[in-house]
Length: 146
Image 1: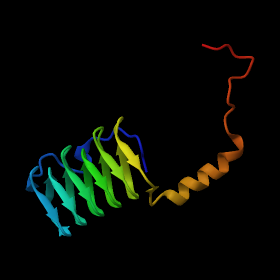
Image 2 (image 1 turned 90 degrees about the vertical axis):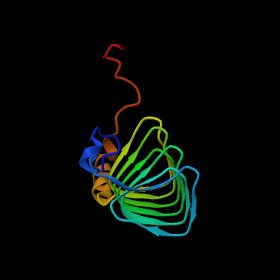
Image 3 (image 1 turned 30 degrees about the horizontal axis):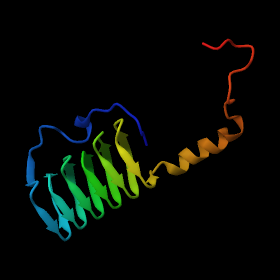
């Protein structure tokens, strides 16, 4: 899992793929929704979402669980997320558990909750192996401070 990477969005979500549906800024949907292709949400959803590709605009808000192959979040999600690829943009806010194999968080994006990866066990083994060799808190006295 890469938390801060510089991948372009085109790797997971082609900018050439058309948006098949838009939930307008003045719309509120209540209930679960399943979708295929790419959807953009500018309004509010109260319910769970499941589908291929989701773009949540800065005015968009979802209160419910979201499962998608790719998510680009400029808005606010309150709920658990399961995604193949998740891009959290600087205006984005996520409150909930996130499970993804590829996470990018832009500076300013807010993620409050637990992050789980399919590589989590491997990551923990590496951390455990290096726990005893943590870096010193201050520079050794033989080195000059810059």
